Length: 138
Image (cartoon, rainbow, N blue to C red; front, side, top):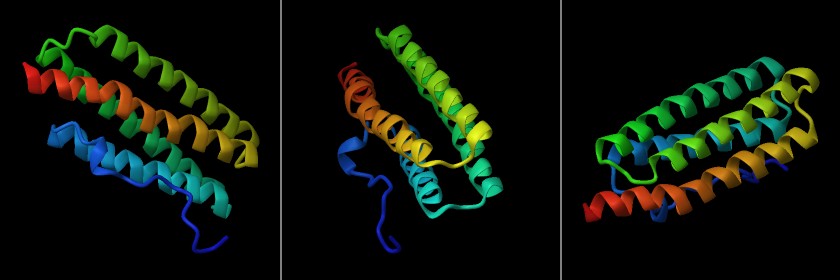
């Protein structure tokens, strides 16, 4: 499967219009793509663990920044959005526990793609775009 990319492709259609949040989203796409490729390519356990840990840390920081932006602009659905972030962190925590117990498996690779990659795209397109629209209108 060499040469085939299995990661995420960034699209300008994902941009909210806030450079800080948009740059974090682009970086999240890169990290998730690296993680998917690492699982598919059978990257060594230590390297994969570092990538997973970095993804978790970066995601937590991104969520903090995005939530601070929502508070700053008095976004009306802040609590709902924050809960979506909390739910995602719990889901990722389950995947990481699975990885630590079982290592890189086909099931983990599939879950990373479905759970993390699809969640990220759907969350940006559905929820984060609402924030961008609210900021532009207010």
